[in-house]
Length: 216
Image 1 (cartoon, rainbow, N blue to C red):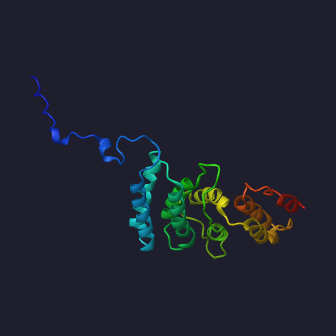
Image 2: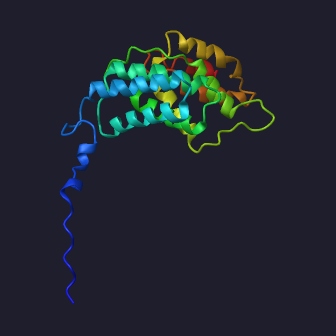
């Protein structure tokens, strides 16, 4: 017995999926300025309201989708987003670790160098150091190790991108911080070596001048 022919799909439900995406028909390139600015303002408003779980998270995800579509953010937008998210990641002690990981991943992607000249941006090194040190070298009776999978690697990757934006003189301050730990008779020297290799900038002429002192 022949089966009945399939019913025709109503024309009103036939749609181009690409029509649901922003910037229809555009090639990968510079992101639409008005759309990105709305997303950035949404991130700013969410942070101002301390609505990290809903408003900020959704706006961050929207900006991530722009990057996933290979859209290029302007330097001004990257500076704005870094200035908003960096304090949230490093200073908000009650920030959920899952959100911290998501925000860190986005900021790492935004700060990856796309040009020879760095962005016009200054980020302090100590808040990021305090965050990492609190997670992995805290003095609490009970372990304060991160519970979120891969959060540590996300923070390390973020530090590698952020350190080129530490203020002038940060390298000397970092050396002063860890020089007292560089005692060969103490295992703390391993902690000092790890932090020096992570925090010190590599794009300075005298970037490795501390090594002879450390090995002496």
